[in-house]
Length: 296
Ligand SMILES: [Zn+2]
Image (cartoon, rainbow, N blue to C red; front, side, top):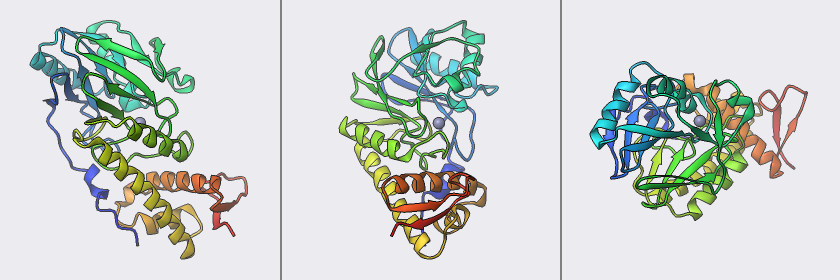
């Protein structure tokens, strides 16, 4: 039986609305708490000067701007230089319009994901792996880390040796790998890549600052490998469809999260399939509806 004592942590955790996590990093909460966002999106104000980078402006929730302005005031920041995004999920990109309506037009930098970016009425300035974005006191180096989302960038803060991890490594719970647009094998490669970079601190998109970055990344890798084993064990016990596997592996999770857990299980099965460890009876309904078996 699977046991995951981290399961309920994503719900009910709270963080201050405004906080300062280093000389170069302040945070305002996006005011969008929920089962998949924990206390809400951490929106980061980066730099040491009068105009700073706003990274991931949250979802566009009423009331957020008050906290952003409080954070700016707290650190002596008088304006925004530009917006930088880790990826195009709505709890990251969705606040751009609200921020620009208030502060005026700003450059928005992210790795393009055309299908998703097209929904927004502002121009995207493309950045990609290895690109740098600088402001006074902070140089961000983009690291392409697909798996959770194809456009996902993490950012090393070169002056600190720290890492902004977006949704790849979280301060609460674990990352959802969507079955359709995510890719668990890529995600594992991305974690290995981040580990090789030996970050010190990690600033996640959700949850508190992580002091020992490498330890947390190793924990994430171990968690995924353990999940592979749990899924294989559930299949050995006779569970051959995603919902039945979820019932066993995610028994400790609230039922409300089981649909998302199904996405995760499907992502694991697709990775195990690629590794030749499971096979599916495909009746054309797609991987979530298929029956799965151990490979002989
Ligand atoms: Zn995301």
